[in-house]
Amino acid sequence: MELKRLLSYVRKAVDDYSMIDEGDRIAIGISGGKDSLTLLYALNSLKRFYPRHFEIYAVTVDLGFNNLILDPIRSLCDFLDVEYTIIPTQIAKIVFEDRMETNPCSLCAKMRKGALNEHIKKIGCNKVAYAHHKDDVVETMLLSLIYEGRFHTFSPRTYLDRTDLTVIRPLLYVKEADVVGFTNKMNLPVCKSPCPADGNTKREYAKNLLKALEHENPGVRERMFTAIVNSGLQGWNEKVLPVR
Image 1 (cartoon, helix red, strand yellow):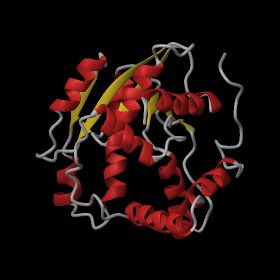
Image 2 (cartoon, rainbow, N blue to C red; image 1 turned 90 degrees about the vertical axis):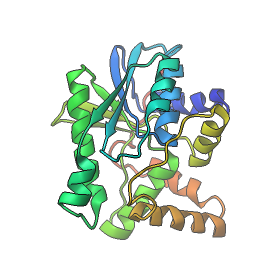
Image 3 (cartoon, rainbow, N blue to C red; image 1 turned 120 degrees about the vertical axis):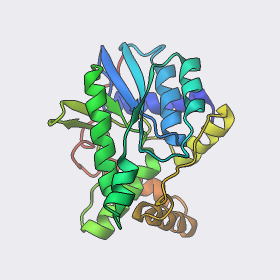
């Protein structure tokens, strides 16, 4: 996917759900995966021409896995002239060794977000951008239906009153396949996740289920996303006028 096309999707999401305001300081959580690196590149490009001025800061929470190499990401941030910070933690040790969690994802995510939010508040950020794309939106809805018995997914924009931070998701109109295409085209330094639970989670189950449904019923992923947009769920029920 070309950068111009990626930016058209990101600009539409940002405008539709009023994700960016004048003077925002936005942190981007960089895991090293394709999604977060695509978001970094997209927002860095968007800020050059967007009518509301904002700054971005790249932040990686290092979970403590010894085989995660972050030098290529630092080089990318230097090339983009984006401030990059690595937060060292012992989350991996706590989750997998000390507590030996059988379902580690929930605790890991909670601790990772806590470390991220604490740091970005210190550097004066008022928003944090997550790299959830269109497929993530639909997969989360499936997980909610299957395991919680309700029609629900995350919102395009969410205010966290405990931390006084706003979460935004500028990639929500971008398909995962397009993210893959963009990272390949731009040769972004994607790092394979060192987590032993990677690829063996309920989300992976939902991803594979969605692939099977799409194979048997072409277009079902897009129809599900449309159902979410039109559902009236909190955060999805109102769009704002485009920025001029």
